[in-house]
Length: 251
View (cartoon, rainbow, N blue to C red):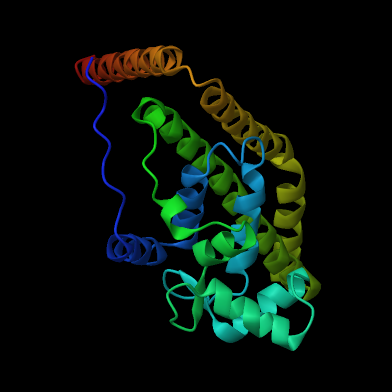
């Protein structure tokens, strides 16, 4: 097999264009881009970046697709994290973080600053043999983020019900009953989902670390086959149920 032809390095203008495309995406997408670029370095600690993304969101606007923080919010974010000490250091940090000089700070800009990365590193070409492993990792990240979003939505719902319960009356009693049910009925199921999300992420990370594309590809194909078979089985069962319902009409 002839050696793979190396692509010329990206020009500064091309890097800037690519970076602008990344900063135009959501915070979650920026986190995924960063992890994908530095997959080996963050082996076993992807949650660190994902949790940072969730904290970053708390300082962002409540409406629209959140991509970056205004300078004052970024200032507050850094200050609350204790990553700078003086006002001058805060201002210097913001200047260093804001790579596109638009007086706002995107999450990926913060990651590049925090982990001391350079723009060319972000867009270095990856080994095509682990591409499907990276996709598995992204799926694991999605599962983690979904579990986290569900947990946050539930906590917000509990806060609303607690406020209603304190008001008393019929609505208060109803809220109290719903609150009690929420606290009891799905605890095991939520724990199960969170454990599954974590397990999925660890499995994907292990596959990336082991770097066995063939074995992982075989697993992927087997999983797809099983999924197809289950779907076909479900469709046959539904078809039989429809026929049974039609037969009842003639009885």
